[in-house]
Image (cartoon, rainbow, N blue to C red; front, side, top):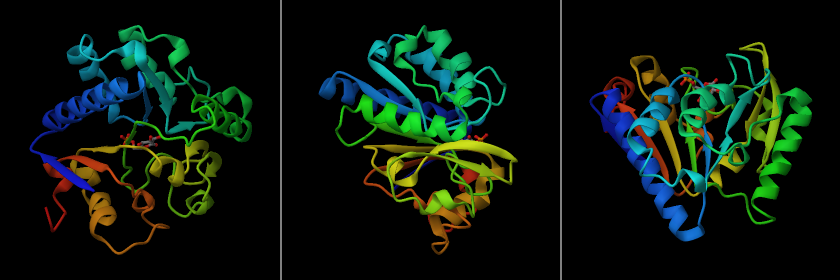
Length: 239
Ligand SMILES: O=C1O[C@H](COP(=O)(O)O)[C@@H](O)[C@H](O)[C@H]1O
């Protein structure tokens, strides 16, 4: 695990955008494609805007394939949809080929959508281990990441798959990568900024293991990078 702490959210976003571009270049040189899973919520919007404004001509966007680490069980036109947010802030401004974007088919219902998304991912990786080049994650102030919420059964799912679950806390079905699927990724990057995330960051990085309370503790892989601003890192004892 690597901590990258910056004074401001602007610097955090610049560092993660550069990291994204480096991973894209590396994957495209090695495999002629870059498979990335995006996070949802509000934090990634500014990252997308930066990729559009600063990396339009630097990344070979026609070789990038986009997936979603989690999705809300709402129509893809709903303002809560993670896909819609990425479409508006990243895919449309860059003119990404729709064949390179893999939305969760929420019109199927959560269970079926999760099953189909697992199959789509397996097809994309053509029978090989589903190993994304990069998975970007956020962190909720309740310590969830993707839609791995506290005290939910998906936390114990040992399959590298996509699962549907009803989350009482947000009164909604969600569709999420399991922790094993996330942990298969070659690189994982958490984007976390703002004082509101400070306690959650401390729980994940410094408290005793308690994945029921702090699900993001499940994310353990060879390369997990944390991109934090000072306020988000402010409760950490060791930096
Ligand atoms: O519900 C979600 O929340 C987390 C954190 O989102 P943020 O708005 O605090 O940035 C996000 O990572 C996840 O993908 C999303 O569905």
